Image (tube, rainbow, N blue to C red; front, side, top):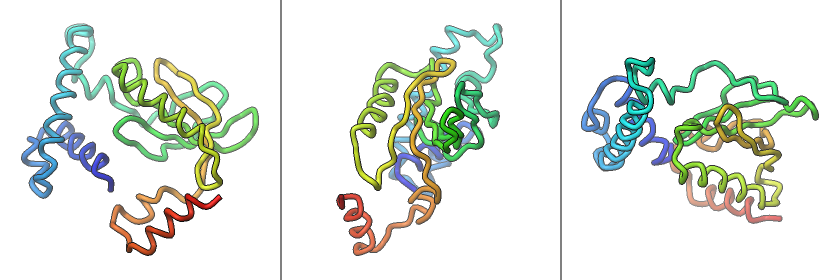
Length: 188
């Protein structure tokens, strides 16, 4: 598991279980600074949301409720969303079918949507632009970009087989094997 994903998991555990950063970082004390920083960001966003939508007007639970990603799949026009493939610190990835071309796609959608900061939106869009410039048989292609209910998204080529993180369980791989994977990306 990447450091970013681990920090995200620890922050989520802190919020979901009403634990302290110290409790969730007991086995990974080197991450406490990052977890505390992320929790501060969450609390700042929660305070801003509380100002806009006071609890007495229907926003109970603050940030977690506002940013909660339900198991309900979005009804994105032009796509039939089938399942959730994964979730990261910035977005959620769905498996879907592009209806006009009858092909499987992956859709990456921002979690925060209209609650996202300008730099987060710029970073998300920049990711799509950068991947779209790459032309390589070992890199997925970007098909489309858009926005749905205030949440930016992009669609990309769907690849069977899952992620490398899942395949290797986040464990370091032998040097020769890792070098061969990197060489595969460099090959034309």
